[in-house]
Picture 1: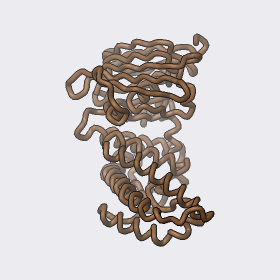
Picture 2: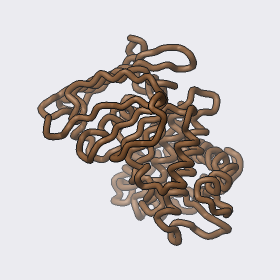
Picture 3: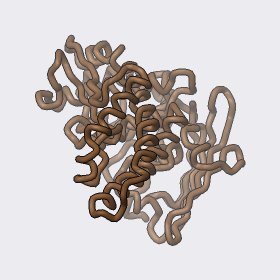
Picture 4: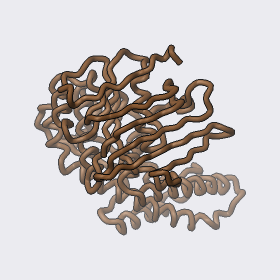
Length: 361
């Protein structure tokens, strides 16, 4: 996968940008607050139709109610265009086009896969569980359309079940439809868990090796996925059903669904011990960087390679980790890098991208 040209209009602090990209590495160099991250965000948004930042209400240029993005890409040896249009009215309306043909969001999402690594990722294992579940969902949804669909359906069913539990608690509903919601929750949730387990198994096959290469420390490292037991889909369903029966009364009491992938979590362990409470900042960087490397490899399986976005993370890495990453990436993935310091890379491999001063807008 290669982005050949990027066009954005009214996105963040960019009134308009038309950037030709002729190399594998795109570098945005400059001080803070010049819009470097905004350009990376536009690539991410045009790929997944959402932001990796929290302040999404400010994605529109000031005083603008619409924005546009267009990418000319090379995918599996063929050239394509991807266009995204957003309009802010009573709510935000979005439309998508691939090669000039209008597509539903579901059809367009994942056409371009991306991997983002920004400074906040270093804190992945010290943040709340929903951050780690979001990470799993983001990776798997790009690779597996059925996972994306199942996740969307699961969230709807979960909402309806929790609403029913609240009504049952105060006696406004007998709960006659609870069995039906539980059945749907079990089927959808078991599939989600099974797919997450497959991804975790993929990570664990190489995680120790990659971590050692990055950190220089020889130690076994594995992802511990805390969820329902079971190695097969049927075993997971059986355990799901059993837990639903066991916790039925408690769910009504708390008006909350206590069983399912929305309760899951994962951590990194070494020889049975959780790593994050005992890890230095440098070790946390190595752990997350190892995950990102394997995420890149995972999304490359059977598909075009993903686009990599590195948002000011090179300054967070010491010389050993920075050297490993740049050597690993060279020639493998198209990479967009923001940095406050010039990179020591061959000029023929680098496209220097413009940034816009915030005060110019």
